[in-house]
Length: 498
Image (tube, rainbow, N blue to C red; front, side, top):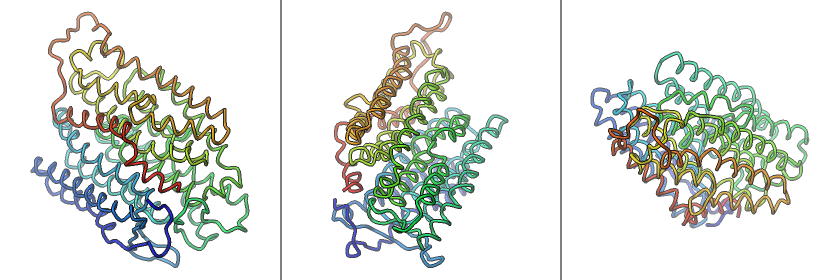
C-alpha cells in the first residue's frame, strides 16, 4: 500500500458519509423499537454488519495508494467537516466496526440473562458511541476529530450511569466531568490556537512534516503539544485516569465498549493522530518531545500495573490493566522510530480484541456465578472451561506471549526502543511484562487448579448462555489469528510509517 498521497490519488468517496450515518440511523431506528426487543437487537446487528461491509469496501482503493475523502460542509476558510479514509483511519475503523458485531450478540445474552433495565436506551447509546468512534476514525482534520470526540463522551454518559443508582450516578458524573472539562480546558483552546497559527486544521497526508510553519515559536508548539496530550483524557494517562476505574460501575458490555471498542481507543487514536499529523515526527524530534513523552507514559504503564496487582475485583484489575496497556500505544509512537510507531499503532488492534475478550469473560463469570472477586474464582475453570480458557488466551496477549496478538506489539516496541537507543524504555517494557504476568496468571491458575471454598460446590455452575460464550470464543480466536498472521492489519500500519 503506497503511503504517500498526492493530489492525483486523493479520491472523493461519498461512502465515507454513509459509514458515519449507518450507526446514527441504526440508533434512531432502535429507539422506535422499545416494544419489539427481537427486532431491536436485529436492527443493531444489521447496522453493525452494514457498517463493517462499508469499511471493508474502502480497502481496494487504499491498496492502490489512494486516499478517500468526503467533504460534508465548509464552515470557514480552512475549517470544515470532512472525512478521510487512509491507512491510519482503517486501523481504528476496522476495529470499531468489527467489534460492534461481536458486542451486539454478547450484549443480547448479558442484558437478557441479567434482566437489565432500559435495554432500548442501552442499544441506542451503544450505536451512537460507534457513530462517534467511526467519525473520529474517518476525520480529515482536527475540527472533525474534536467534534466526534465530544459526541463519544456525551453518548456514553448514559451507559456509564445505566443502573441509575447512587454508585452509577457517581461514576457517570466523574466520567463526564473529567472528559468534558479536559476537552474544554485544553483541546478547544489548542484547536483555536492551531487554526490561528496555521490558517487551517487539515491533517497533512504524511506524518513527518506536521502542520506548523517553520517560523512557529518553539515554546508555543510545546505548550500546544502538552495541551493536546492532557486534553485527550480518554487516553487514560495518569494523573487524568481516574474516570476509567470509576466507570466500571456500568454493565459489563459497557465496560467492554469503554475499554476495547470505542472510548479509550478514541482517546489513544486522537492522541497518536495528533502526535504524528498535527506535530509530526520532524517537529517532535526537533523539539525533543518524543522521548520525554515515552518516559512520562512509561510511569503510567508501571504504576497502573502495580495498582492492578493490588485489586481483587476482576473488573477493577482489568480497568487498571487498560490504563497501563493504553500507554503502550502512546509510548511506541513517542519513540519516533519506525518499529516503535508500528508497535504502538498495531496495539490499537491487538489490545482491542484481547481486552474485549477479558471483559466478556468477566461478564460471563458474573452471569454464571454472581462472583466478581478473583479470590472467589478458585476452581471455576473446571465448570467453565471455555470461558477461562479464553481468559487465559487473552491474558497471554496482554502479557505479550506468542502466538497471541500482544506478542507482535511487544516485539515491535522492544525493537523500537533499541532503535531509539533507550535502555530505560527497554527496562520499562520488561518490568511491565513481569507485572502483567503477576496480575493475570493467578486468575487462570486459580480457576483451573484452585480449590473451591468450603461449603461451595461446583455442581450447578455452568457456562454462560451461548449468546455470550460464542462472542467470547470468536474474540479470543481472532486474538490468536492476528498474532499468527499480523500482516493484514500491518499493511495499514506500514502505510502510515512508509
